[in-house]
Structures are given as C-alpha cells and as structure tokens.
Length: 175
Image (cartoon, rainbow, N blue to C red):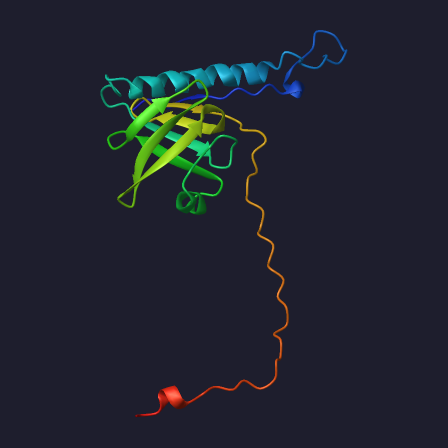
C-alpha cells in the first residue's frame, strides 16, 4: 500500500527567508485561512457526493474527526459526555439522513443501537481521512476550548440541626 497523502499547510514567519533584511509585513490577506477554507471545500465535495443518490463510490469511506464544542456543532448530550472535546465518525455503510449545506452537514448514526443526529460544521473538522486511498487532510481549529471547564462544586451548607428527630414506629408494628 502506498504512503498516505498528507496535506497540512503551515505558514510560519521564521520559515520564510526574506529577500532583504527587513521584517515582512503582516499577512493581511490571511493566506493560511484561505488555504484551509479551500481544502475544506474538498471535504464538502466528498460529503456532498456521499449524500447524492450515487453515494460513496467503490471502497471509499471517510473518517471525519471534529471538535464537538465548535460553534454550530451539535451532538446529543450522552454523546457529548463521552466525547467532550473531539470525536471521529465513520461514513461507510451505516449512516442515514445525510444532508449538506454551505457550512456543514447533518447525519444520523447509530450509537449503541440508537439513532443519534449530529450536526458538523466544516470549520469544526480537524481531520478527514479516506483509508481506501490513504488520503488525509488535517486542519487547525481555532477558538474552540480543548477541554471543558470543570463544573464548580455546589456550595454545601452545614446540615441544619432542627433538634431531635422523632420517628413513629407504628408503621413497623405488627397489627
């Protein structure tokens, strides 16, 4: 099997060798974001094809990893509890109601035999992998917490002492 195709773009200022000794001006075009958005278009096209009547051709199938806390992402509470940061879904044989939009896709998958609806924005995707052809795209997702904040413990008040507790034993006596 051939080596996986990995496309990851990172523009790091220190990697650039300016023609002059002057510092480069800031990238006001935001090329790195433009490239990531363009590559997310590959995911969009693949998911749209999977949603079409033709479906996913041949042996192709997709592993899609996404940030569950990203803006626009939606998962049922029990799934979110199991995957509070990131989860990977597989689009191969068992998925239903796959629909796409400009910003993401919705899909129903089976978890423990129960159908669950997920909404995945393309901007939340961190990895797209088609193992049948060893094709992978990897993305940086900004502005999403990597871990959920710890819930604050509820203040515990000392138990009130209302005096002696009186319990009637009549209900326990044989009649």
